[in-house]
Image (cartoon, rainbow, N blue to C red; front, side, top):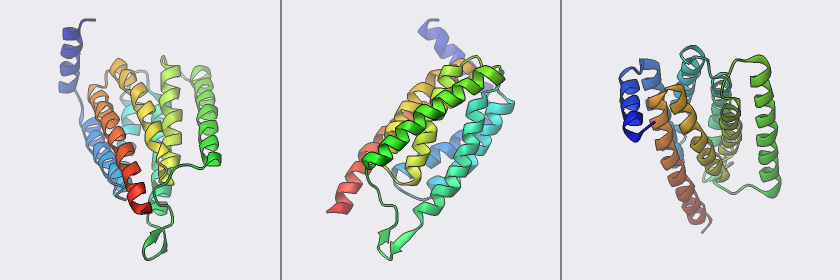
Length: 208
């Protein structure tokens, strides 16, 4: 496929994009923007976005992106958990979960969680679904699962996991014909890098 054909396909699919995908995209973009700023509004906006995305992936994709739809339900659960964590305070001026790097133990747990969920989701997809993209689908899901866990604890590594997840999600969504979601993940990739650099600066500032 030539570059011109890719552009034409992209524009044609954008015109056919239905309202749940538009609404989900706007809500999720707002969520990542708030996450970059370390603002708790990352979670209420994210909840709206992921519930709509679960609907799109399960009922509007052919064949359905089962792992991604289930992943967005996990996002919802972790958003509630993260929302609770982010508003907790040790005292009037100190958060219970400030921005920080993972400890060695937290890093190993996160990587182990990623590998185990990747294998588990991949096996599930090839055994009980008709997914035609099990490797990429499970990669997006497992890396995002780890990212959400780290984000709930305000760990800087969450942005590294998001960067990886977005790099896989871009070609996957393009292949499935979700052009607006493809564009959304490109923006997510840029925001994830910005979030990574900004959180590092915030941690240094707060520690000084």
